[in-house]
Image (cartoon, rainbow, N blue to C red; front, side, top):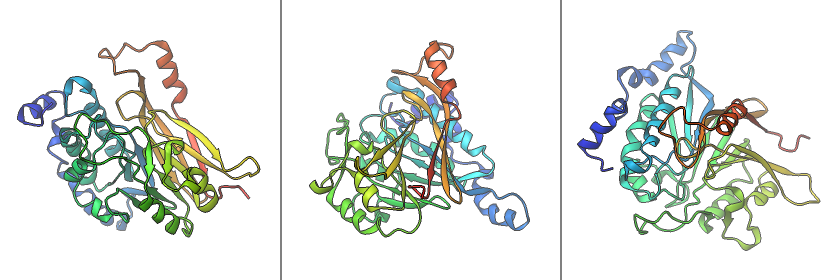
Amino acid sequence: MNCNRRSFLALAATGLAGCFTGGNGATGRRQADATAGEAAGREPLFDDNLSVIISDAHVCGEDARAAKYTPKRLVAFVDEVLAMRPLPRRVIHLGDLAYLHGHPADYAVSKPILKRLEDAGIELVFCMGNHDRRSEFAKAWPGRLEKSPVPGKYVSVTSLGTADIVILDGLQGTDDRLLTDMGPGSGLLTADQFSWIKKELPKRKRPFFVASHFPVDDFKTSDKKHGHLGRWLIKNAPMCIGYLYGHIHRWRPEWIHGAWSERKSLRTLSMPSNGLWGDIGYVTLRTGEDRAVCSLEMKDFFFPAEPSDPNDRPAPWRIKVEESRGATCTFLYDRQGV
């Protein structure tokens, strides 16, 4: 699908016109009104301890026939977030915003949809997935790469209220790959990022998550001595409370350990896809005094693609959705419970 007037009209016909006109006057004024509302004793507009995490939106702009339902799924998500009261302070996307190839059209379609959140005063945080392309993402969302503490990589540290989240960039390869190249499926922690991690993470005083698009087992470091990122975090980053990731399109809470002779462990959590295949939904993350809790908002399940008939859901799919709704995963700030 080319991002031209014809594409715009086609999307408008499916109910997406609002997302291409940006936020309306009400949402555009929300952030400016927040401080005045709190001063007047009204309920705060934003909850600083509430975040929403999505992953693998795979918004398809390059070929609408391939996954024309993914932009609609993202619009439905944005509508739901904007209806929350109070609003989450931030929305985090854990990679693969693009459909398959990091095509410019994918970012052109997703940008105005997500911009509605930003217009409402919600902070947007991104990381790179294997289907993304840094150069095209940078054109759609300028100024973000320049703020990274690791030049040329989308690395960031963001407050979650009583905890933080450290985003790492595991995208391998360069941006000169062909537009038909989907990129390597595993992540790589390059030497420059690992140097930054070794310097910054051990000394952090606040509890924090580490997050990337890639599972921790597939996220290799360039340091032969510390080839496994998760084991390095267990040993060297005592305030790290968990590892969050996307890529596999499943809600999957697990844990990893450093060695059989040690009690230390680290919880990991995989996020559902926002709309392409597999577990479909998003996660709310609430931070508290001594823990953070992730809750699954399960919307659907399908594979390999969304059925055109809403009623075309085999019984195992429906059972999976019913059993998964309301699932939670808790991350204690005292990771070892002592």
